[in-house]
Image (cartoon, rainbow, N blue to C red; front, side):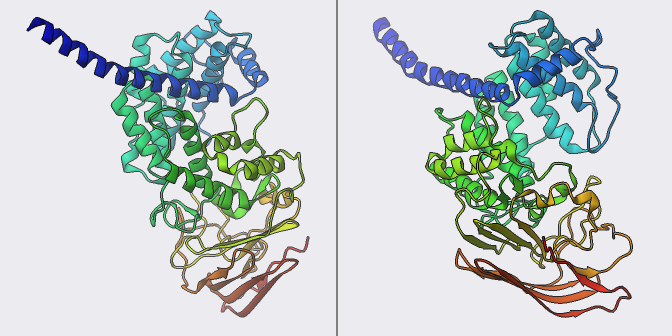
Length: 494
């Protein structure tokens, strides 16, 4: 009887052991991939500059005099600088080929800085900082510092990270919160938490009629609002990061979801970029941010693990297209390199892409099914007329780069509007629904036609665009208004 019992016990141990080891192996693979991704995301020179500049200035309690820890700003939140410096320190202290690798003074600075952050618990008036940016930063610093972080401090910070709930969010926001759940699972090696984090992270990779990837492969967020390169880029960056982290584990991204992700990246997002610069119409309220149109960082450098690199790992079948895009993004090749004629009408997003090797010509409209470009968090205060047929025309790419502070916002290329003496401010926050039904278009993948029945701000017009190889014909009729101002339609003749 005793022999049988021992045999059964051995059998049970034998059956359980492989699964336990497999789970542990998953954690070690994922943590290793995350750490390498973080270490490659910033150059050694930039890391060293942070260390040399800010290590001597750190006070004994772990803080810095030049940071206002009571600041609650919605954007450009000052306390986040503290975590940025600590992350640079953690990278330097944990990266084997760095001159500060294993430096006890630098490790101590990270620990002291984290203790100060925990004691102060800075808060922004913008929920995004509190529920996404801060927990993510804490998780990244802890993963980089796990070899020298005191267990008691780690436990305290892990508890502090439990802000935000991905189950309550949609689209890119769900993904962002799931990422810091994944960090927490890695730090604590909690398999149940990892299961939930990965499931929630990959859940947005599906077609939806709500916020996220649409059936036409456009991307909508904050209601039915075009966000291809704003929240759409957050979606891409986050999904490819997570997908590349879990390659080779039991959490690897499924083939169906990988195909949706790859198609959105190559057939929508990258099509909106000419050379190294994106279409201003795809940036949402981020259009007002300096440097927002320049996308060269997506290809990164030889040492970095860029978005293009991650996409090639997850979607190896797209490698040729991604390599061509990388050559354009880095400026190694001209904007026409690897570009073929392409036309698409995004019927869910009220947006048209027309691409030729020589140029790109894209049109933004709005209907009762979609929202105008939003203002919010004090951004894009003047973009009231962006959805009224604005046209992005690019040959070399940087035609509109950082032009926004000098724009006359009622005369954006392609827009028909009243001629105001002073730019009209936005009055509706977070996107205003369109007012007409007859907006849309047709396409065969190479040529197409788009229409916009406009009735907004006391201006009515019927507008249409016909897309060919060497020309785009833009027509307008029925232009009418009862207002005192002249009505103008702005042309880009560059």
